[in-house]
Image 1 (cartoon, helix red, strand yellow):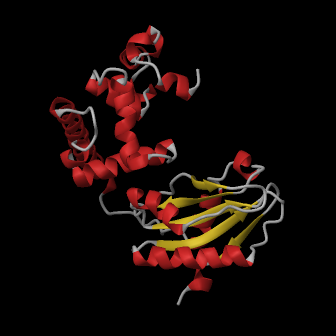
Image 2 (tube, rainbow, N blue to C red; image 1 turned 120 degrees about the horizontal axis):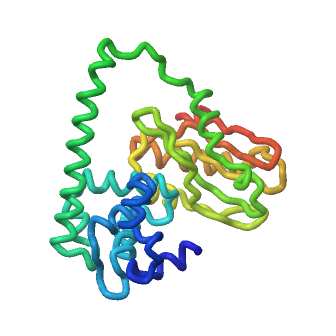
Length: 257
C-alpha cells in the first residue's frame, strides 16, 4: 500500500493489523509513526478526514515537505514555542483534541525530566570529549547523502542541518530541476530551515553529469545563502557537490566578509 492510498483511508476502513491502536498493543508503541501516535491520542477527526488525516494536517503545518525525522523536529519545536496557539490554527482540531495533545506532551516532558535526573548520577564530573572539527562534521554530513540521491538523473538541491547539541540532521531536499541545473531561491531553503532552528547547516546538491567541480553559479549561490544565513544567526559551514563517483567542496570561509 502506498502512502497516498493509506493517507486517503480512515481508521475504520483499515484492516485490524494496520490500525494504530492494534499495532500499538500488539507490536509496541515504538512501531508507530508520530502521525499514528497523534491519531491515536486524538481518537477521532472531521468527517472524510479522520484522525489520521487530521494528524497529518497537524504535522504539515510546520513541516510540510521535510524528511520524516525533520518533520518530527519541526512539530516539537513549534509546540515548544507556540503551544496551544499553534494548535488553535488547525482546522478540525477542537479544544478537546488540543487538550489531549498538550497533556501528552506534558507527560513526555515530565518523563524526560525524570530520565535526565536518573541519568545524571552516572555523569558527574562532565565529559572530556572534544567537540568535532569542521572536517569531521562535514564528512558526517556527507554520509547523509544516499547512493540513490548521488545517482539521481536530475539535479537537486538541499541542506543538512546541524543542531546545538552537535547532532547532525537528515538531508532535506528543497528543490529539483532538470539534468543540467536547478533554479533555487535562497528563501525556499530558509522557509524550511527556520522551523528546525539549527545552529548551522551544510548545503548539498548533485551534478548528474558526473563532474562535481563547482561552477561559478555554485559559488555565487553559496555566497548568497551565506548572507541570508548570517542575517538569521545561522552558520553556513560549507557546500558539498556530489556525483555518482566523486564529490567537491566549497568552503564557506571563502565567502566570509
